[in-house]
Image (cartoon, rainbow, N blue to C red; front, side, top):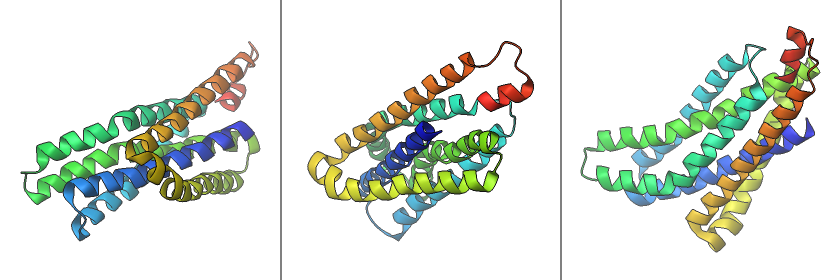
Length: 210
C-alpha cells in the first residue's frame, strides 16, 4: 500500500509536468488569448472528470485487477507523453489554416484523450485501497491528498528547475520516465499479489488481490 501511494505521488507529479508543458506548447502554436486558454483548460478539466467517471465504472467489478489496469493506464500515458510534443507541433502545422472553430476542436481532442487516462487513475486505486481498508472516505481522502501533493511539488519543480534548465522536451521525458516507473512497479506488484493467492481462493480473495 505504501508503494502504491508513492506511485500515485509520481503519477500526480508527472501529470502536472504534462499540463504545464502542453499548455506552453499549444499556446506557442495557436497563440495566447482568452479562447485558446479556455479550450486548453476546459479540455484538461473535462478529461479528468470523464476519466474519473470511466475509472469508477470499470473499478466497480471486484473481479477486475485494478492495480494492473493502473499500470496499463500509466504506461499508456507515458507512451503518449513520449510523442506528445512532436504530435502537437505536427497537428499545429496542419491546422493553422483551418477556421478557428476547427482548430479549437482539434486542440480540445488532442488534450482530452490523455487527460481522461490521468483522471481514471484515482478511482482505480481508490477501489483497491477500499477493498483493503473497507473505508471509502479514508481511501479517497488519502489518495487525493497524495496525488495533489505530487501535483503541487511538480508545479514548483517544473517552473523553477525543469523548464529553465532542461526545456520542454526533456521535462516531458522526465514525466515519461515517472509514468513508466509507476507502470512497471504496479505491474510487478500485481504479479506478486497473484502469486500469493491460494489455489482455492474465493471470489473475495480474488477481489482483495485486484
